[in-house]
Picture (tube, rainbow, N blue to C red):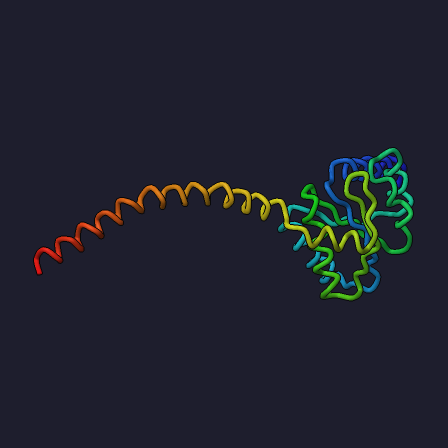
Length: 171
């Protein structure tokens, strides 16, 4: 890799570190190509990506970025998993690490906040952005359906009472 390619890679990594909601660093030593492709596919499904880069170049790209604190984690065979959704990458990596012991989570960063292994697992346990939106929509929609039910209920109650009265008179 010549100098121009390295500079381009450092710039790309810098963009990733700035724009990502979460970056997870993990060791991937022993993962097969098929396992790595599976991890990449799972990450693509949630809108994230997986990147393997030279640690030295990643450390250069981290300089002056909000998540600069993860530079200490970049030793050995590391892989970077990232997504704009602050939860998605952590969920996928944590789930994959549970199934495959060769992937070892080292830590990560969520904005300026450094995360250790426990921090990444805690972020992974949080609901995703889509799940939060769905729960908010259901909370907003529930009172409206209750109001509609309450408005419609008296009419059905009156109709029930009238039919009962009719049956009594007929008898």
